[in-house]
Length: 239
Ligand code: SAH
Image (cartoon, rainbow, N blue to C red; front, top):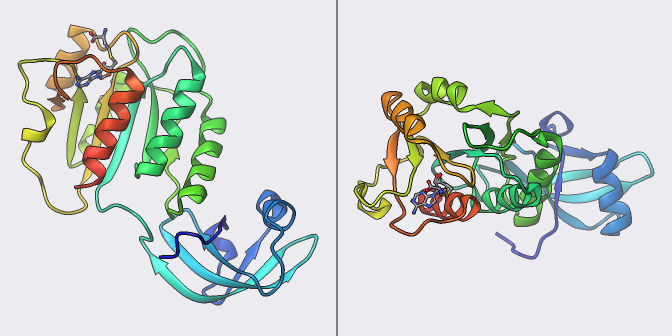
């Protein structure tokens, strides 16, 4: 709906169907940055796919309360449930970029992944989760993608069974380009693995294949990790 509406976040436990309460950081954003007042109309998203068209009734130092005019489910969410597992990058700001863009385009999960060729480092899960929250509000979607803790490729492969389709992105001229894959209907869940700067080793690619992950190629050009992740998200989320 309204592309110009301002979006705010409240967790489901602060929304009872009739009233919404906004507190904490979100309150200071609403009252001080966005200067919202009683009588203003806003959209509230709850991070689980619900959105509410709200008119503010009171805005105090402790909380803002609004009355729900209308509620929506799966608000501005794509049909497919896409999760990305991506090799962490040497430059953390590139992963910041990836988290923001993948959230805007519509992923429901991002798993920072450790592989043979990742440089040992820490995942900034809390920071990325916050980036996902602000990207969710900024673009007006209603599901907050979950950013996982740093997970090894082995562990990610073990979770493959909980997705309907699992892919590993790999530059390989022998595999058909993504556009040739049959398009499956509905909101089936997809997990896509994307390698770090150095890519996956051949051994990792065979282990992915053994775990039932299908190779997925975007063609012959070798893309940067974040480019491949974003391109694949666009292709998957618009189905
Ligand atoms: N030197 C590495 C390049 C890695 S690029 C190599 O030769 O493998 C980083 C990651 O982005 C890759 O591991 C892959 O997951 C993804 N990627 C890059 N280009 C791609 C393409 N054309 N198709 C599919 N995935 C690609």
